[in-house]
Length: 73
Image (cartoon, rainbow, N blue to C red; front, side, top):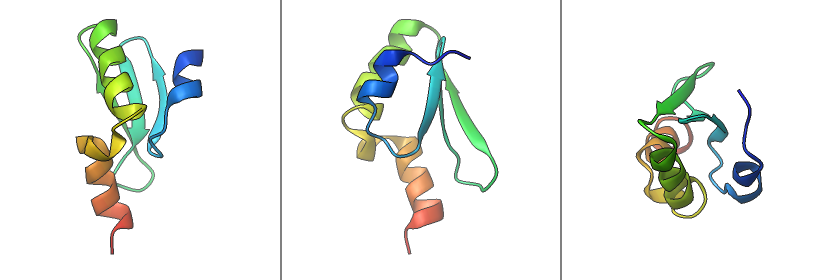
């Protein structure tokens, strides 16, 4: 599971855990678990990462789910 250097350099989301071919790994809303988003193609994965992981992460459904489940009081 090789992570791209692009991803490591630009990701701002605190719940991002890694990426590899057509997938993005995130923190999960349940302790001791991870969440993997699998895309139908690398272009869709990169578009998601550019939009949500790198810039607008507070609008990402995964971010909002994890934030609500684990960190909001």
